[in-house]
Every structure is written in C-alpha cells, then in structure tokens.
Amino acid sequence: MKLIKTFYLITMITLFSSQWLMAQPEIFPKGEKAPNVHHTGDVWLNHLAEADENFDFNVVQATMAAGSKLNWHLHPKGQQLYITDGVGYYQEKGKEVQVVKQGDVIKCEPEIEHWHAATPNTPVTYIAISGNAPTKWTDTITAETYNAIKAPELSSSDTEKEIKELSKKKWDWMADKDVEKLEKLFHDKAKFVHMSGSWKKDRELEIIETGSIWYKKAEVHDVAVETFGDDTAVLWNRITLTAHVRGNDVSNEFTVTEFYKKESAHWKLLDLTFSSVRDDHEIQK
Image 1 (cartoon, helix red, strand yellow):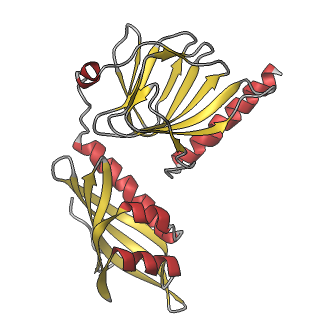
Image 2: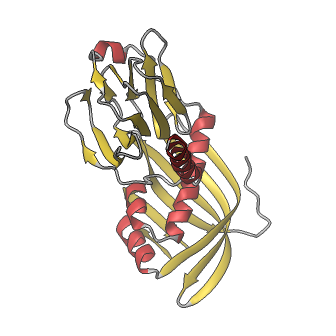
C-alpha cells in the first residue's frame, strides 16, 4: 500500500510539473476566498484532493495576493510546497527568510514551525501537499516583522524573461481563442493597431472570440525587450503569422510591438501594433 501511495504521489507531481513547464497559468480554478482566521490579506484556496483510506495526504492550491501572509504554524506529518506562480517568502523557526518563486520546491519536515507569504509587491501561488493531520497554528506574524523583510528586487533580466514568457502565452491564448485569459491581460484602455485599422479592447476580444480574424499560429523568429523602471516594458517580436481570414489561411511577416504596464503586481498589455516588414528583417538589440 505504501508503494501504491508513493507511486500515486510521484505521478501527480509529475503531472503538475509537466503542466507548469507548459507555462500555462491558472491550471486549476482560483477557488474560494478564505476567511481571515490564520492569515492577513487575501488568500484563495482550492482543495484539489482530500485524504482518504488509500491516500494519506491532502492537496490544496493556495493563491495569495500581494502583501498577504500566513501565521506561524506546523504540520504534524510535514508538507511540500510547489511554487507555480509569483514570488513569495518562506521561513522556518530559527532560520533566515527565503525568497521563493515559480519552479521552487519547499520540503517542510514534520513538526517544524514555519510561515509563508506573498511579498509586499508580488502575489504567489503554490500547490501544498500535506500529511493528513490538522495544522497547528502558533504565533502571529506582525506587520512590523513582515515589513522589516527586504522585499526582493527583480533585475531587468528577470523582467525581460517574464515579459517574453507572457508574450508567448498571449500568442497561444489568441490561437486558442481564450478570451477569458486575454480579457485579464488586456488593459481596459488598450489599443490594437492592424494593417486594416485600429480598435480598442472590446473589439479585439470580439474579433478573437468570433474568429473573424483567427490567429492560428505565430512563429516567433526574434524577440527584444526594453524595460523602463520596474513597471514598464516594450517588447518587439518578428513573427510569421498564419491567420484565418474570410475563409482562407494567409501568412505574413510582421514586427509586432507590445507595450506592457504593471498594475497591482500584474502586467497589462496597453498596445499591440502590427507592422509589415521584409522577411529578412532583424530586430536590433
């Protein structure tokens, strides 16, 4: 039975990991907002799997808004955290605060007192796999203690990587006509400039959803990103776009300019402009 449980856990973790590597956010729904009993700030929980007579562990997805934090606590049977998005804090009693981010794995041994949180400026999402025993809550994390931690600063290379990944996801969402994710990405005042005209967010979402222009595939040849401070970035793609328009598939070379602005710890697309270029055009970096 122990072997079966171990095999099941490894299989489930592998499944989660493969989905993370596909860089698709919100693998699972956000869940329900948790009452502020053992934490401060906004936290959403999605109970993915409950322990039973065969599998002696619980699986929960937690999404923590920027500035939210859990109190000190411990797990009698231990816990593992798989960070799927964002940046956060993790600290065990008597040790330094760790900064954790997407792709990190934290293994907390049984009966080890610890706490975790989002940073003041960034949300964090993780999958928690915990042994089937009630969490023991101990002390609170005061605002003074939390605010005294030096918040991590993203380097320009970190921001460039984040913007490149977000741009890639955007092309995938456009190909899949996933207007729900695009609606969250597009700023309410966003502009979209095409060869045939320009329009605002609502019109672009309508075009994508109805398929009047179906962005079937964007083959990205070249990418450059420039950052301006911590909250502004411009990305240039050189792409071959295959689109379905008026019953026909057409392919064209474009340089696409994308303007991003960070608001409330989330990047928003402010402008998407298509420029016609030669197929041997290169973006200067």
